[in-house]
Length: 161
Image (tube, rainbow, N blue to C red):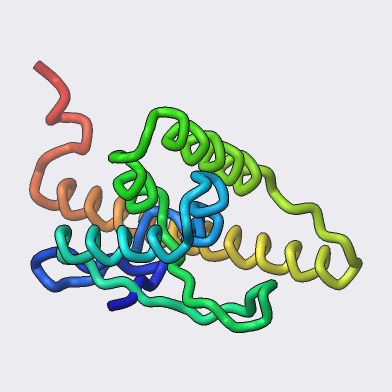
């Protein structure tokens, strides 16, 4: 079993992107709840089986020297996981999610000139794409208005009583 933090697999077997790329590691959940990481991993596997989800374990270096297997859970799954825990433990997880979301909502200020140029270029590309899309829509509207006019209906005649 494994969890790809960007994809969730439903009972139908189809995978779809989650609404957020924010995740919380099973290691962090263990630290916040004071529970043993192995027990958290076990709970995640049981949850995955019960919900027909597919989770991917990633190997991360551990402070103890040997690498450990860690899950990265999106918000929904981490909240489902801890819903059976005590109120205090659930509160810690909810508070941490609020911190993560607050951090993610603050746009990062480029720290280098090159990063600022990349951000400016990306912003300009998005603006140009949006402008091109608007021109395409405007062109389609003009075509539709012409078709309506040729058919004998004025664009505003539909709105008259």
